[in-house]
Image 1 (spheres, helix red, strand yellow):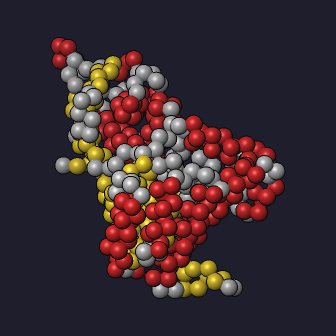
Image 2 (tube, rainbow, N blue to C red; image 1 turned 60 degrees about the vertical axis):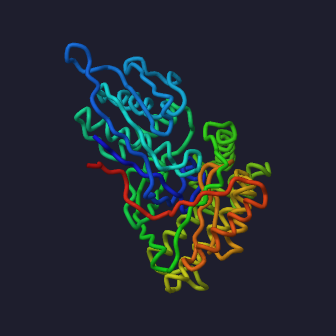
Image 3 (tube, rainbow, N blue to C red; image 1 turned 30 degrees about the horizontal axis):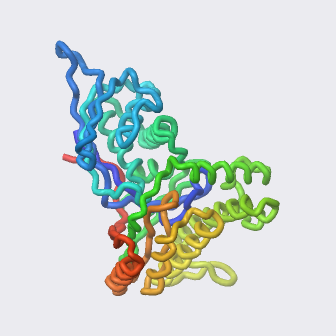
Length: 382
């Protein structure tokens, strides 16, 4: 049994998911494959062990007893598949003993949701092995619980929803308050452009204190504004009511980034961009220029208001735009990872060359590039 789940790039809406705002991710062609086989027990009875191996970490196989799985019992890369088995059992699913072999072509720590791709591929494979079918939204919540409660990363639902629900050639507008999904056509090639992920090779760790601190700051800002979560606030001017300048900046980012996600979805769905007196239908190229401007605007917000960018990301955005990109911004939780750029096809080679030169001049490891093609969600492989 082999299941593939994709990584994702977030076109817009960073740190808005756990604030119950809007996000606009799309699935990548790259992802994680989980190959699962039954692990026989003694005397032909089903085994109660989970054996996990990864081609990316070949020297660290892990075997654990299913009945002894508790949060914190497994660490490192194996905590994610073990956490999925635990969360499935917590949801009442009798997970069979299994051997799990993992393979991935996603860079770890690059902000492209390799952990959620791992969780979702394993979840689907274990469900099939155990003879159960779980609705994908429910499975996303189970995978999220594995990451939150077993691994200990306080992430939102965007990554699992993207891995399980995205459609090829689309971005997915997700209202994280209601979990309403709208599939939004996203085809940069129609405008002579392409999306590119630039891995700055600076790894991040979402379990770090900085991420948890940002989440706590957002919760405090919401409390002071008298709302259950910042996603409930539509007017960026509301952030000015906060006396604490740090909380004011945090809230302003969340409110404006959620609005940018809605604005991009609206432009792609309507074929128009905001204009004086309303929205004006425009050619596809103009829509993607508009999206590019919002990408760069979002990066400034993440850098200055949410303060989760890092030097290599700032340089990447600056150099990419100067070399002809329509826009660019950091993606993921921050403090390392990748930048997403929207680039006219005829400028792609120039942007790549400029970025490689900029990194080399600074003595940094050259970036890696991933073509960000809007792709399909998790699926079974032959």
